[in-house]
Length: 158
Image (cartoon, rainbow, N blue to C red; front, side, top):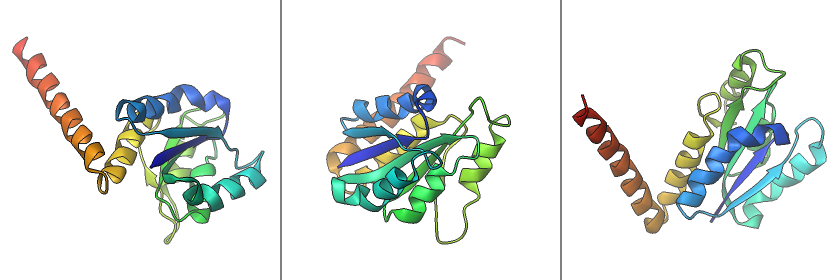
């Protein structure tokens, strides 16, 4: 099972790289592409309609500004979509991106993470895959145990 990671433009890659990195750390294959809802709508329609036929299990879509990409992909695809609002140069402090992704109409859900929260999007995608893949689930359990141990270790220095 692969995770499809798409973004509206190459300028979103530094944020989306965190999702790529965490998923690769869980040994989950990723397919990364630039799919602009406004500049390449035909490509967006094709991707949304066919991702599930191409071995994608979960889609992570990042976008800044008006941020239509995650919602449009969710309207086209039967797969779970995780939206990453990106604080971009044309963004209004990121709020436009957050609200565009978060405030979806009934029937078209997009799981939305924090502004620039691609790492959490990657973890959530891994957790979704882990519901049917015991190996991935074990890696998630180990990862969360590691988070706990880091907190315990940091408390020792107080």
